[in-house]
Structure formats: structure tokens, C-alpha cells
Image 1 (cartoon, one colour):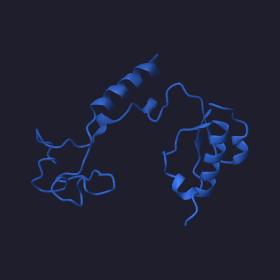
Image 2 (cartoon, rainbow, N blue to C red):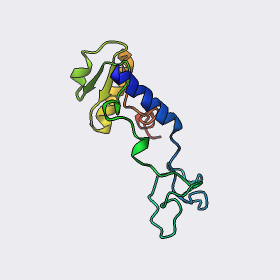
Image 3 (spheres, helix red, strand yellow):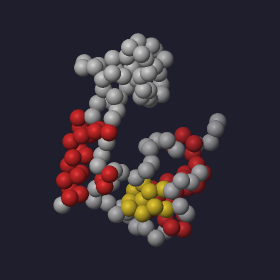
Image 4 (cartoon, helix red, strand yellow):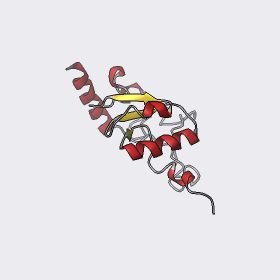
Length: 139
């Protein structure tokens, strides 16, 4: 019951949470939307910065209140998850099981993806289309 309430709190705060973007990022093309990389938050350190002094009407800074409760941080709902680090461990799973790949190299991760897709196993900590580019040979 307690975890369910904490999950509700987490979803409510995440819905209200704004995107924390760098101060004045819209002014410079290097920092703004034209940049291909994701915009990162940088703490404003200026002497007269309104964002640093948390003035009303300016960009909101990341703070403790925007985080998830400790007990449900990184918690995935309704999932029995196993962490794997070798291909032998992958053999013991069946179709529809959910796994998390341990910290391994790129080649091993590609092997995990191939074998898991053949067996129908779901990998939770995998960014889509990230490793497909590397599988094709250079021409």
C-alpha cells in the first residue's frame, strides 16, 4: 500500500516537472535548439542572475522537491527483473521475461540483443536503435 502511494506521488511530480534548460540557451545557437546534443542544465553563477536568486517568472532550477521518493527511485512497476552479465544466464529465460543488461562492452551487448530478440525477451535498459547501426558492415 505504501509503495503504491509513493508511486502516485512520483507520477504527479514527474507530470508537473519542467524541462530544466540552461539559462539564456535560446539566445545562443551553440546552446539552443540548433545544437544536435541534448540541452544540459548548468547552474547559473552570475552575480546579478535572476535564475540563481530564484526570482518569480524566470527559469526554475532543479532542486530536491522534483525528485522521486527514495523507496521508488528507479522502480519499475509490475515487473520481475533479472540482471544478466553472460550469455549463459540468458538461456534460462523464456519469452516475455524482462531483463537488465549489466555493464558490459559493446560487442557483448550486441550479442545479448540478437539472442534476446530471437527468444522474445524484453531488455529494459536499452535505448532503441542505438546498436542497429553498428551491426551493418561498412560499405
